[in-house]
Image (cartoon, rainbow, N blue to C red; front, side, top):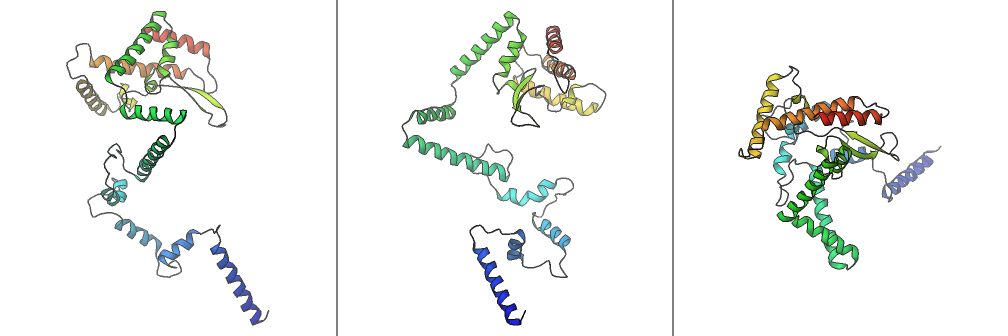
Length: 291
């Protein structure tokens, strides 16, 4: 190939690359973006990637006494957290991070879309959305809340009269707001290996104390468990204002501990592959009756 042909080939190839870069479907590599910002630093013999990363990490935080070995999250994010101040209406965000701030933005945009749709439409759907939206803003009155609570208590008393424990479990699981505290929580979720199939799942409840090891008097972490219980009893006392003669703090704790032990006992008798319903039914009924 002559010199003229080589130059001609290079020129055509360069033109082809420029056309590709201008294409609507251009794939911009990470390296291209990086070089635009920092230049071709990797080709330099003096460039040390490790030192550069350490330098950037040190510059990313404000001068403070935070040790990254003790609190790496705050060490990295301190400056960003100090810069990002919550606006009015964002007080409900208890953990500030990019995801929750973006989620808050999505909530506000969705409300604007709903508000616009309600104002510009006069359909059955727009009226239903409007009613739902207003109900979420005002929520229930105290009278309505008491009426709902009394109806629920009446349903529970009726089930107790008939002695049908499964109906009681079904009632407690029918409302997801309170089902987490049911002796057994039932849920319908996609299968782990085949998401096109839904399976019934039975799990133990979420207990008042997140660390369930507190409920076991096994001689391990005795001092830690003692302090944990003291704080829990203090909270319960404050919750009931220390004046309710019908509330025994020890009874509350003992009931939750017995519930935890009961659920573990039952779930240990459930195979990983199948549930022996006959055995499960007899074990559950007899254990609940005893307790």
